[in-house]
Amino acid sequence: MIDCGRAKRPGWSPSVHYAGTAIDLLVIQNLDEDHVEDLSELLRTVTVRSVFSNPTVTASALASMKPDGMRTGVSTAHNVLRDFGPGLIGRWPDTGEVQVVHFYCRFGTHFTETNDLSLATFFRWGNFTILFGGDLETAGWQMMLRNQEFQRLLVGTQVFVTSHHGRENGKCAELFQIMRPDIAVISDDAIQYGTQEKSTQWYRDKVKGIPVLGTENAYGIRDKRHVLTTRRDGTISIAVGAWGNYLVTPEKVQNELTLGEILGAFGRNALSKDSQVA
Image 1: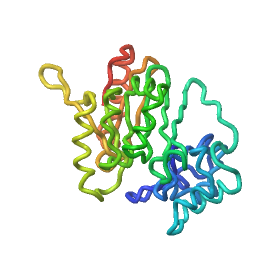
Image 2: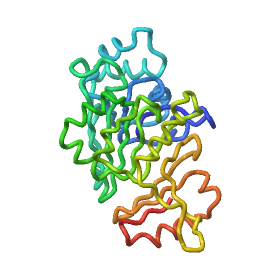
Image 3: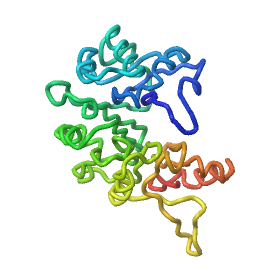
Image 4: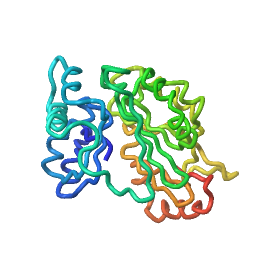
């Protein structure tokens, strides 16, 4: 699980959705309230076997970054860091063929505010790579770009979950001098800042786009989507095939298509690693 915030619409929370189950690894990308709002309840209703956050952010460091006080989620995270220490808590789970790689800046040495201390997390399986950007801002991205291994993983990234919910200060043009993802995904709620709409167009110009299932014209050409947002598209599911091909299914499409149609489209493209359907 990446973070444990809550969706205000339609009132979704992981502590309810996953109650009674177990989570092998909870990755806390950013120690701000919107990323850990449900942490207290999650730890009560779900068995969390391990937790990972920026290893350089201790409980005292987190407290120093919250001079105006901590709300419930951050306070719970602070208590966890105080009781168990920063970084990995528990054992790193066996993720099988899935490779999980984190990059982070150092508290004090590089930054002293939470956004640029976010984790940047790559998940890789076969030829497919997705990057979650946390709440990194431009300076944080630029610091990470000094790392050659970070640059290497950027090259193969197909899906980019943008940082800071698509806000202006999460943009970094230098990233796209190295990576050229197929799509960008913006995890956001209702529009709170005018720059969020402008950012959608900015990211659209930086990605390739993927064809949309069910939009074929007379010549067999499909429309393309470049940027998906949870605000507009709802829950976004990504199914990945063994050859690196993948199927992106927004919630609204799931409601319109039958399972057979979705699986049929995925099956027809399963032998081509360059073929994606959304």
